[in-house]
Image 1: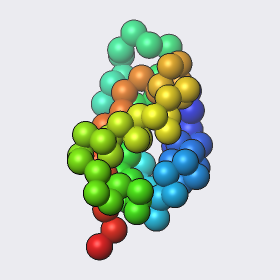
Image 2 (image 1 turned 45 degrees about the vertical axis):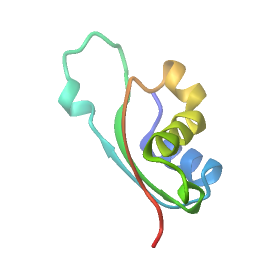
Image 3 (image 1 turned 60 degrees about the vertical axis):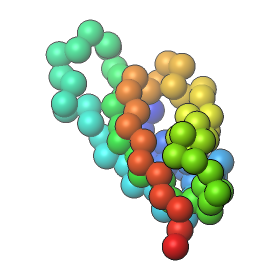
Length: 84
């Protein structure tokens, strides 16, 4: 498992995020078969999203967390935002 703080730090660094909000959704998945999975909803605001489609923005988040998604994160809900 990976902590929400670790996820936040990765997204802040790799996406030059202005804001990252993380919600731990693990309690919604109690009883599932995974031993120690992480279930998160992340909301990321980054200038790097400017001019990108929603799909591209989400792909950037997935790319930033590529290694963590292999074993440490079981489920990820993504919300992205371009600064005003």
